[in-house]
Length: 113
Length: 202
Image 1 (cartoon, helix red, strand yellow):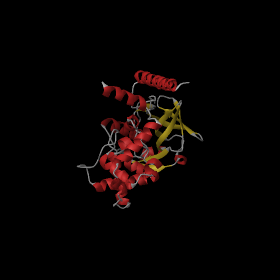
Image 2 (image 1 turned 45 degrees about the vertical axis):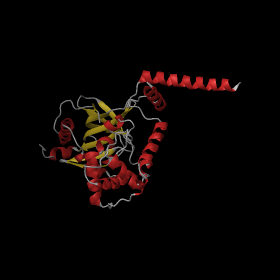
Image 3 (image 1 turned 120 degrees about the horizontal axis):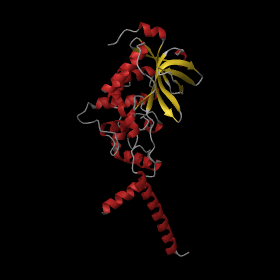
Image 4 (image 1 turned 180 degrees about the vertical axis):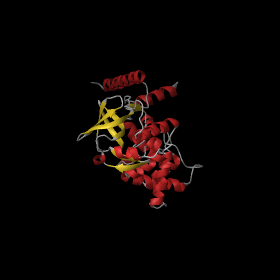
C-alpha cells in the first residue's frame, strides 16, 4: 500500500505534461504543376492540386534511372513527376524530401524488376 | 498569523495541488506521446550523468575519423540506430516520437558536448528507463561503438549523398519495400492507379 502511494506521488510529481498528438508524415505523389517562391503545387492523379511548403530543411533528390542523386530546388521544373514526404503543420504540409524525375529521364529509365 | 496556521496553510495548498495533479493524471492518463517536462528532462540528464562512471567519461576514442571508419559507422547507424534516431540523428521517427523520453537530437549541443567516453558508454551500456538499449556485450565489437561515436560527431555535417546512402541501408519491411517500389515506378513514368496524397506513419 505504501509503495503504491509513493509510486502515485512520484507519478504526480513527474507528470504535468499533456499528451500531444504527433503528426504522421504524408506522401504527396503527382505531377509538378507550379513552383512558387516558398511552395510548390502538385497535381495528383485524382485531379486535386496540393500545395506543399518548402522549408530550409527540405531535401531535394533527383531520381535518374535507378539512382537517387542529391539535387536543388532549381533543378525542379513544371511537369516533373514528384514524390514528396511531408509533415503536416496545422493546415499546411511542409516538405521533408522531394524526390523527382524529369520528363526526359522517365522515358530513358530502365525497368528495375 | 501564528506559526501553526502558516504550516496548515502550506499543507492545504500542497494537498490541493496534489489533488489537482492526481485528478489530471486520472483524467488524462500517462501517455508516452507526451513531451517530458523540463523538470523531468533535467532529472533524466542528471541521472544519466551519474550512471556513467568517471573513468568511462575520460576514455579517449582509439578509432580514427577516417572516411572508411565513418562509412562503416554510417551504415551501422542506418541499420541499427536510425529506426529510433533517424538517419540525420534528429529522433524524428515514428518510434522515436513514441518513446518517453524522446531520443535526443544527436546533432544538438546537449549531445555534442558529451565526451567521447560518455557517448561510448551510452552506446555500450544503454540508458535505464529509456528506449536506449545496451549494444555492448555479445553484440559487435567495442571498435564498432567507437566508430559510431565518430559518426555522431559527424552528424551535424551529414551530406545529402551520405543520407541517401543510409536510406538504402535502412531496414525495411515488406510494406515499406512495396511503397518504395511503387514510388520508383511512378518516377520512372509508369502509370500508377490512384497515387495521391496519402498518410504514412514514419
